[in-house]
Image (cartoon, rainbow, N blue to C red; front, side, top):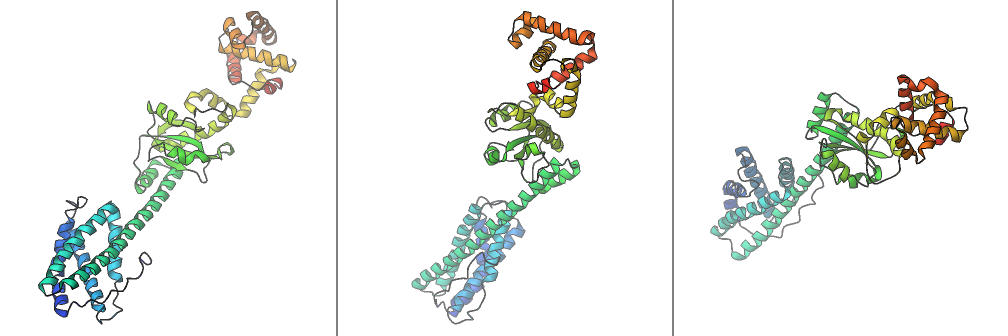
Length: 410
Protein backbone atom coordinates (compact mmCIF):
# COMPACT_ATOMS: atom_id res chain seq x y z
CA UNK A 1 0.00 0.00 0.00
CA UNK A 2 1.62 3.22 -1.11
CA UNK A 3 -0.86 6.09 -1.08
CA UNK A 4 -3.96 4.76 0.66
CA UNK A 5 -3.21 6.69 3.85
CA UNK A 6 -1.39 9.91 4.56
CA UNK A 7 1.49 10.23 7.00
CA UNK A 8 0.76 9.55 10.63
CA UNK A 9 -0.03 12.81 12.45
CA UNK A 10 2.43 13.78 15.17
CA UNK A 11 1.60 12.68 18.67
CA UNK A 12 1.43 15.31 21.38
CA UNK A 13 4.02 14.78 24.09
CA UNK A 14 2.81 12.29 26.69
CA UNK A 15 5.03 11.23 29.55
CA UNK A 16 4.20 7.66 30.50
CA UNK A 17 7.42 6.91 32.26
CA UNK A 18 9.75 4.00 31.64
CA UNK A 19 8.02 1.78 34.22
CA UNK A 20 4.58 2.21 32.60
CA UNK A 21 5.94 1.64 29.08
CA UNK A 22 7.83 -1.47 30.18
CA UNK A 23 4.72 -2.81 31.92
CA UNK A 24 2.60 -2.21 28.84
CA UNK A 25 5.14 -3.93 26.59
CA UNK A 26 5.29 -6.92 28.88
CA UNK A 27 1.54 -7.43 28.54
CA UNK A 28 1.25 -7.03 24.77
CA UNK A 29 0.94 -10.77 24.18
CA UNK A 30 -1.86 -11.05 26.78
CA UNK A 31 -3.62 -7.98 25.36
CA UNK A 32 -3.41 -9.47 21.87
CA UNK A 33 -4.87 -12.78 23.06
CA UNK A 34 -7.80 -11.13 24.84
CA UNK A 35 -8.43 -8.83 21.89
CA UNK A 36 -8.63 -11.85 19.59
CA UNK A 37 -11.07 -13.49 22.03
CA UNK A 38 -13.25 -10.37 21.92
CA UNK A 39 -13.28 -10.36 18.10
CA UNK A 40 -14.76 -13.88 18.11
CA UNK A 41 -17.93 -12.42 19.66
CA UNK A 42 -18.68 -10.45 16.49
CA UNK A 43 -21.39 -12.43 14.61
CA UNK A 44 -19.54 -12.51 11.29
CA UNK A 45 -16.48 -13.96 13.02
CA UNK A 46 -18.12 -16.23 15.58
CA UNK A 47 -17.31 -19.82 14.75
CA UNK A 48 -15.36 -18.80 11.64
CA UNK A 49 -11.97 -18.08 13.18
CA UNK A 50 -9.48 -20.91 12.85
CA UNK A 51 -6.44 -21.28 15.07
CA UNK A 52 -4.30 -20.00 12.21
CA UNK A 53 -6.49 -16.93 11.81
CA UNK A 54 -6.50 -16.31 15.57
CA UNK A 55 -2.72 -16.38 15.50
CA UNK A 56 -2.68 -13.80 12.71
CA UNK A 57 -5.03 -11.52 14.67
CA UNK A 58 -2.90 -11.76 17.80
CA UNK A 59 0.25 -11.04 15.82
CA UNK A 60 -1.37 -8.02 14.10
CA UNK A 61 -2.53 -6.63 17.47
CA UNK A 62 0.95 -7.01 18.96
CA UNK A 63 2.53 -5.25 15.97
CA UNK A 64 -0.03 -2.44 16.06
CA UNK A 65 0.18 -1.79 19.79
CA UNK A 66 3.95 -2.10 19.77
CA UNK A 67 4.12 0.52 17.04
CA UNK A 68 1.81 2.73 19.10
CA UNK A 69 4.12 2.53 22.09
CA UNK A 70 7.02 3.40 19.80
CA UNK A 71 5.05 6.44 18.72
CA UNK A 72 4.49 7.43 22.35
CA UNK A 73 8.20 7.12 23.05
CA UNK A 74 8.97 9.38 20.08
CA UNK A 75 7.05 12.13 21.81
CA UNK A 76 9.53 12.08 24.68
CA UNK A 77 12.74 12.14 22.72
CA UNK A 78 13.09 8.76 21.04
CA UNK A 79 14.08 8.62 17.39
CA UNK A 80 11.34 10.59 15.56
CA UNK A 81 11.96 8.61 12.41
CA UNK A 82 10.67 5.34 13.88
CA UNK A 83 8.43 4.06 11.07
CA UNK A 84 4.78 3.19 11.58
CA UNK A 85 4.46 1.97 8.00
CA UNK A 86 4.55 -1.75 8.94
CA UNK A 87 1.50 -1.39 11.21
CA UNK A 88 -0.45 0.63 8.69
CA UNK A 89 0.52 -1.77 5.89
CA UNK A 90 -0.54 -4.73 8.05
CA UNK A 91 -3.91 -3.06 8.66
CA UNK A 92 -4.32 -2.46 4.93
CA UNK A 93 -3.52 -6.10 4.15
CA UNK A 94 -5.92 -7.22 6.87
CA UNK A 95 -8.74 -5.31 5.16
CA UNK A 96 -7.92 -6.90 1.81
CA UNK A 97 -7.82 -10.35 3.37
CA UNK A 98 -11.22 -9.88 5.00
CA UNK A 99 -12.70 -8.88 1.63
CA UNK A 100 -11.25 -12.02 0.05
CA UNK A 101 -12.81 -14.07 2.85
CA UNK A 102 -16.18 -12.59 1.96
CA UNK A 103 -16.69 -10.54 5.12
CA UNK A 104 -18.28 -7.14 4.77
CA UNK A 105 -16.77 -3.81 5.68
CA UNK A 106 -19.37 -3.47 8.44
CA UNK A 107 -18.16 -6.74 9.98
CA UNK A 108 -14.56 -5.54 9.78
CA UNK A 109 -15.37 -2.24 11.52
CA UNK A 110 -17.39 -4.06 14.17
CA UNK A 111 -14.35 -6.23 14.87
CA UNK A 112 -12.22 -3.10 15.20
CA UNK A 113 -14.67 -1.54 17.67
CA UNK A 114 -14.87 -4.65 19.84
CA UNK A 115 -11.13 -5.26 19.63
CA UNK A 116 -10.29 -1.65 20.48
CA UNK A 117 -12.43 -1.75 23.63
CA UNK A 118 -10.85 -5.01 24.75
CA UNK A 119 -7.33 -3.72 24.09
CA UNK A 120 -8.02 -0.49 25.95
CA UNK A 121 -9.37 -2.30 29.00
CA UNK A 122 -6.12 -4.25 29.32
CA UNK A 123 -3.81 -1.35 28.49
CA UNK A 124 -5.53 1.16 30.78
CA UNK A 125 -5.69 -1.29 33.68
CA UNK A 126 -1.96 -1.93 33.38
CA UNK A 127 -1.19 1.79 33.11
CA UNK A 128 -3.23 2.62 36.25
CA UNK A 129 -1.65 -0.22 38.22
CA UNK A 130 1.74 1.25 37.40
CA UNK A 131 0.88 4.70 38.69
CA UNK A 132 -0.34 6.64 35.63
CA UNK A 133 -2.44 9.62 36.66
CA UNK A 134 -6.09 10.02 35.68
CA UNK A 135 -5.24 13.01 33.49
CA UNK A 136 -2.54 11.05 31.68
CA UNK A 137 -4.86 8.04 31.29
CA UNK A 138 -7.44 10.27 29.57
CA UNK A 139 -4.80 11.64 27.21
CA UNK A 140 -3.48 8.13 26.64
CA UNK A 141 -7.00 6.98 25.67
CA UNK A 142 -7.42 9.84 23.22
CA UNK A 143 -4.14 9.07 21.48
CA UNK A 144 -4.72 5.33 21.41
CA UNK A 145 -8.20 5.53 19.89
CA UNK A 146 -7.02 8.08 17.31
CA UNK A 147 -4.28 5.64 16.36
CA UNK A 148 -6.76 2.75 16.09
CA UNK A 149 -9.01 4.92 13.93
CA UNK A 150 -6.08 5.41 11.57
CA UNK A 151 -5.49 1.66 11.40
CA UNK A 152 -9.17 0.98 10.80
CA UNK A 153 -9.13 3.55 7.95
CA UNK A 154 -6.21 1.67 6.40
CA UNK A 155 -8.14 -1.59 6.70
CA UNK A 156 -11.21 -0.01 5.09
CA UNK A 157 -9.01 1.17 2.21
CA UNK A 158 -7.57 -2.34 1.82
CA UNK A 159 -11.06 -3.86 1.88
CA UNK A 160 -12.39 -1.41 -0.74
CA UNK A 161 -9.35 -1.80 -3.00
CA UNK A 162 -9.63 -5.58 -2.88
CA UNK A 163 -13.31 -5.47 -3.83
CA UNK A 164 -12.58 -3.05 -6.67
CA UNK A 165 -9.72 -5.21 -7.94
CA UNK A 166 -11.76 -8.39 -7.65
CA UNK A 167 -14.68 -6.68 -9.39
CA UNK A 168 -12.49 -5.57 -12.30
CA UNK A 169 -10.98 -9.03 -12.64
CA UNK A 170 -14.38 -10.72 -12.55
CA UNK A 171 -15.73 -8.34 -15.19
CA UNK A 172 -12.81 -9.23 -17.45
CA UNK A 173 -13.44 -12.95 -16.90
CA UNK A 174 -17.15 -12.51 -17.64
CA UNK A 175 -16.37 -10.56 -20.81
CA UNK A 176 -14.04 -13.33 -21.94
CA UNK A 177 -16.67 -15.97 -21.20
CA UNK A 178 -19.26 -14.01 -23.21
CA UNK A 179 -16.93 -13.79 -26.21
CA UNK A 180 -16.20 -17.51 -26.00
CA UNK A 181 -19.89 -18.39 -25.81
CA UNK A 182 -20.69 -16.24 -28.85
CA UNK A 183 -17.79 -17.83 -30.74
CA UNK A 184 -19.06 -21.35 -29.89
CA UNK A 185 -15.86 -22.42 -28.12
CA UNK A 186 -15.70 -26.06 -26.89
CA UNK A 187 -17.61 -26.81 -23.70
CA UNK A 188 -14.50 -27.65 -21.66
CA UNK A 189 -13.10 -24.19 -22.47
CA UNK A 190 -16.39 -22.57 -21.50
CA UNK A 191 -16.59 -24.44 -18.20
CA UNK A 192 -13.06 -23.37 -17.28
CA UNK A 193 -13.88 -19.73 -18.04
CA UNK A 194 -17.15 -19.94 -16.11
CA UNK A 195 -15.27 -21.22 -13.07
CA UNK A 196 -12.68 -18.44 -13.35
CA UNK A 197 -15.49 -15.86 -13.51
CA UNK A 198 -17.36 -17.45 -10.58
CA UNK A 199 -20.40 -17.63 -12.89
CA UNK A 200 -23.00 -20.30 -12.06
CA UNK A 201 -23.56 -22.47 -15.11
CA UNK A 202 -27.30 -22.48 -16.01
CA UNK A 203 -29.29 -25.08 -17.92
CA UNK A 204 -30.02 -22.77 -20.86
CA UNK A 205 -29.18 -19.35 -22.24
CA UNK A 206 -31.40 -17.15 -24.37
CA UNK A 207 -29.78 -14.49 -26.53
CA UNK A 208 -31.56 -11.12 -26.49
CA UNK A 209 -30.57 -8.26 -28.77
CA UNK A 210 -31.44 -4.77 -27.54
CA UNK A 211 -30.44 -1.32 -28.81
CA UNK A 212 -27.29 -0.23 -27.04
CA UNK A 213 -29.13 2.78 -25.64
CA UNK A 214 -31.47 0.39 -23.77
CA UNK A 215 -28.76 -1.93 -22.45
CA UNK A 216 -28.43 -0.79 -18.83
CA UNK A 217 -32.14 -0.27 -18.21
CA UNK A 218 -32.83 -3.74 -19.62
CA UNK A 219 -30.10 -5.38 -17.56
CA UNK A 220 -31.70 -4.03 -14.41
CA UNK A 221 -34.79 -6.17 -15.13
CA UNK A 222 -32.97 -9.45 -15.65
CA UNK A 223 -31.10 -12.04 -13.62
CA UNK A 224 -27.85 -10.75 -12.06
CA UNK A 225 -26.13 -13.66 -13.82
CA UNK A 226 -27.07 -12.30 -17.26
CA UNK A 227 -24.01 -11.91 -19.49
CA UNK A 228 -23.62 -8.88 -21.72
CA UNK A 229 -21.62 -8.18 -24.84
CA UNK A 230 -21.24 -4.84 -26.57
CA UNK A 231 -17.77 -4.30 -27.96
CA UNK A 232 -16.58 -6.06 -31.13
CA UNK A 233 -19.61 -8.32 -31.42
CA UNK A 234 -19.41 -10.72 -34.36
CA UNK A 235 -22.66 -9.42 -35.82
CA UNK A 236 -23.77 -8.26 -39.23
CA UNK A 237 -24.34 -4.69 -40.31
CA UNK A 238 -28.04 -4.99 -39.47
CA UNK A 239 -27.22 -5.65 -35.81
CA UNK A 240 -24.29 -3.29 -35.32
CA UNK A 241 -26.26 -0.92 -33.08
CA UNK A 242 -27.35 -3.72 -30.76
CA UNK A 243 -25.94 -5.22 -27.60
CA UNK A 244 -26.43 -8.89 -26.80
CA UNK A 245 -27.61 -10.25 -23.47
CA UNK A 246 -27.36 -13.95 -22.62
CA UNK A 247 -30.16 -14.56 -20.13
CA UNK A 248 -30.00 -17.76 -18.05
CA UNK A 249 -32.81 -20.27 -17.68
CA UNK A 250 -35.66 -18.55 -19.48
CA UNK A 251 -36.85 -21.68 -21.27
CA UNK A 252 -40.29 -23.29 -21.17
CA UNK A 253 -42.96 -21.33 -19.36
CA UNK A 254 -40.48 -18.65 -18.28
CA UNK A 255 -40.14 -17.40 -21.85
CA UNK A 256 -43.49 -15.61 -21.57
CA UNK A 257 -42.16 -13.89 -18.45
CA UNK A 258 -39.07 -12.76 -20.37
CA UNK A 259 -41.26 -11.40 -23.16
CA UNK A 260 -43.28 -9.38 -20.65
CA UNK A 261 -40.13 -7.98 -19.05
CA UNK A 262 -38.84 -6.81 -22.42
CA UNK A 263 -42.07 -5.10 -23.47
CA UNK A 264 -41.34 -1.71 -25.00
CA UNK A 265 -37.57 -2.26 -25.35
CA UNK A 266 -37.32 -3.15 -29.06
CA UNK A 267 -35.79 -6.47 -28.15
CA UNK A 268 -35.20 -9.50 -30.36
CA UNK A 269 -35.31 -12.89 -28.63
CA UNK A 270 -33.35 -15.87 -29.87
CA UNK A 271 -34.38 -19.39 -28.86
CA UNK A 272 -33.44 -20.93 -25.53
CA UNK A 273 -30.49 -23.27 -26.08
CA UNK A 274 -28.28 -25.41 -23.85
CA UNK A 275 -25.90 -22.93 -22.20
CA UNK A 276 -22.86 -24.11 -24.15
CA UNK A 277 -24.79 -23.61 -27.43
CA UNK A 278 -25.69 -19.98 -26.76
CA UNK A 279 -24.04 -19.04 -30.07
CA UNK A 280 -26.92 -20.71 -31.94
CA UNK A 281 -29.44 -18.54 -30.10
CA UNK A 282 -27.35 -15.44 -30.79
CA UNK A 283 -26.97 -16.20 -34.49
CA UNK A 284 -30.72 -16.63 -34.95
CA UNK A 285 -31.40 -13.36 -33.14
CA UNK A 286 -28.90 -11.62 -35.45
CA UNK A 287 -30.63 -13.04 -38.52
CA UNK A 288 -33.92 -11.72 -37.16
CA UNK A 289 -32.65 -8.12 -37.17
CA UNK A 290 -33.47 -8.01 -40.88
CA UNK A 291 -36.93 -9.36 -40.11
CA UNK A 292 -37.40 -6.69 -37.44
CA UNK A 293 -36.66 -4.06 -40.07
CA UNK A 294 -39.53 -5.34 -42.22
CA UNK A 295 -42.20 -5.31 -39.54
CA UNK A 296 -44.02 -2.34 -38.10
CA UNK A 297 -42.48 -0.86 -34.98
CA UNK A 298 -44.22 -1.89 -31.79
CA UNK A 299 -43.78 -2.38 -28.08
CA UNK A 300 -43.77 -6.17 -28.08
CA UNK A 301 -40.35 -7.81 -28.52
CA UNK A 302 -39.76 -9.85 -31.65
CA UNK A 303 -39.78 -13.51 -30.59
CA UNK A 304 -37.95 -15.59 -33.19
CA UNK A 305 -39.87 -18.67 -32.04
CA UNK A 306 -42.99 -17.14 -33.56
CA UNK A 307 -41.36 -16.40 -36.95
CA UNK A 308 -39.49 -19.59 -37.75
CA UNK A 309 -40.92 -20.09 -41.25
CA UNK A 310 -40.18 -16.51 -42.24
CA UNK A 311 -36.65 -16.74 -40.82
CA UNK A 312 -35.98 -19.94 -42.76
CA UNK A 313 -37.22 -18.35 -45.99
CA UNK A 314 -35.16 -15.20 -45.43
CA UNK A 315 -31.90 -17.06 -44.85
CA UNK A 316 -31.12 -16.80 -48.59
CA UNK A 317 -32.78 -13.61 -49.87
CA UNK A 318 -31.36 -13.98 -53.38
CA UNK A 319 -32.48 -17.59 -53.56
CA UNK A 320 -35.98 -16.58 -52.49
CA UNK A 321 -36.02 -13.80 -55.11
CA UNK A 322 -34.90 -16.25 -57.82
CA UNK A 323 -37.56 -18.77 -56.79
CA UNK A 324 -40.22 -16.05 -56.81
CA UNK A 325 -39.16 -14.87 -60.26
CA UNK A 326 -39.24 -18.41 -61.66
CA UNK A 327 -42.63 -19.48 -60.30
CA UNK A 328 -44.25 -16.13 -61.18
CA UNK A 329 -42.83 -16.10 -64.68
CA UNK A 330 -46.31 -16.78 -66.23
CA UNK A 331 -47.40 -13.38 -64.81
CA UNK A 332 -44.40 -11.47 -66.15
CA UNK A 333 -46.09 -10.37 -69.39
CA UNK A 334 -49.08 -8.82 -67.61
CA UNK A 335 -49.38 -5.18 -66.55
CA UNK A 336 -47.71 -4.74 -63.12
CA UNK A 337 -50.97 -3.99 -61.26
CA UNK A 338 -52.68 -7.03 -62.78
CA UNK A 339 -49.71 -9.27 -61.98
CA UNK A 340 -49.71 -8.05 -58.37
CA UNK A 341 -53.44 -8.78 -57.94
CA UNK A 342 -53.13 -12.27 -59.40
CA UNK A 343 -50.05 -13.06 -57.28
CA UNK A 344 -51.91 -11.87 -54.19
CA UNK A 345 -54.91 -14.05 -55.12
CA UNK A 346 -52.67 -17.07 -55.80
CA UNK A 347 -51.01 -16.65 -52.42
CA UNK A 348 -54.37 -16.49 -50.60
CA UNK A 349 -55.62 -19.50 -52.58
CA UNK A 350 -52.60 -21.54 -51.46
CA UNK A 351 -52.78 -20.44 -47.83
CA UNK A 352 -56.55 -21.08 -47.59
CA UNK A 353 -56.32 -24.39 -49.45
CA UNK A 354 -58.62 -23.30 -52.26
CA UNK A 355 -61.60 -22.28 -50.08
CA UNK A 356 -63.05 -19.51 -52.26
CA UNK A 357 -65.07 -17.76 -49.56
CA UNK A 358 -62.05 -17.66 -47.21
CA UNK A 359 -59.90 -16.29 -50.03
CA UNK A 360 -62.49 -13.59 -50.75
CA UNK A 361 -62.67 -12.62 -47.07
CA UNK A 362 -58.87 -12.43 -46.83
CA UNK A 363 -58.67 -10.19 -49.92
CA UNK A 364 -61.78 -8.14 -49.10
CA UNK A 365 -63.30 -8.90 -52.51
CA UNK A 366 -66.43 -10.67 -53.77
CA UNK A 367 -66.20 -14.46 -54.26
CA UNK A 368 -67.05 -13.91 -57.94
CA UNK A 369 -63.94 -11.73 -58.23
CA UNK A 370 -61.90 -14.57 -56.75
CA UNK A 371 -63.46 -16.98 -59.23
CA UNK A 372 -62.57 -14.71 -62.14
CA UNK A 373 -58.97 -14.24 -60.98
CA UNK A 374 -58.47 -17.96 -60.38
CA UNK A 375 -59.74 -18.60 -63.87
CA UNK A 376 -57.06 -16.28 -65.27
CA UNK A 377 -54.43 -18.01 -63.12
CA UNK A 378 -55.56 -21.41 -64.47
CA UNK A 379 -55.20 -20.12 -68.01
CA UNK A 380 -51.62 -18.99 -67.29
CA UNK A 381 -50.42 -22.03 -65.31
CA UNK A 382 -52.55 -24.81 -66.75
CA UNK A 383 -51.95 -28.30 -65.36
CA UNK A 384 -48.92 -27.12 -63.37
CA UNK A 385 -51.25 -26.03 -60.57
CA UNK A 386 -52.02 -29.72 -60.03
CA UNK A 387 -48.34 -30.62 -59.75
CA UNK A 388 -47.24 -31.00 -56.07
CA UNK A 389 -43.74 -29.74 -56.87
CA UNK A 390 -45.13 -26.57 -58.46
CA UNK A 391 -47.52 -26.05 -55.54
CA UNK A 392 -44.59 -26.40 -53.10
CA UNK A 393 -42.50 -23.86 -55.03
CA UNK A 394 -45.39 -21.44 -55.20
CA UNK A 395 -46.12 -21.84 -51.48
CA UNK A 396 -42.51 -21.11 -50.56
CA UNK A 397 -42.16 -18.24 -53.00
CA UNK A 398 -45.37 -16.56 -51.88
CA UNK A 399 -45.22 -17.44 -48.16
CA UNK A 400 -43.76 -13.99 -47.48
CA UNK A 401 -45.70 -11.10 -48.92
CA UNK A 402 -43.60 -9.30 -51.50
CA UNK A 403 -43.53 -5.61 -52.22
CA UNK A 404 -45.68 -4.77 -55.27
CA UNK A 405 -42.53 -3.73 -57.09
CA UNK A 406 -41.04 -7.19 -56.56
CA UNK A 407 -44.11 -8.89 -58.01
CA UNK A 408 -44.20 -6.48 -60.89
CA UNK A 409 -40.62 -7.28 -61.75
CA UNK A 410 -41.13 -11.01 -61.63
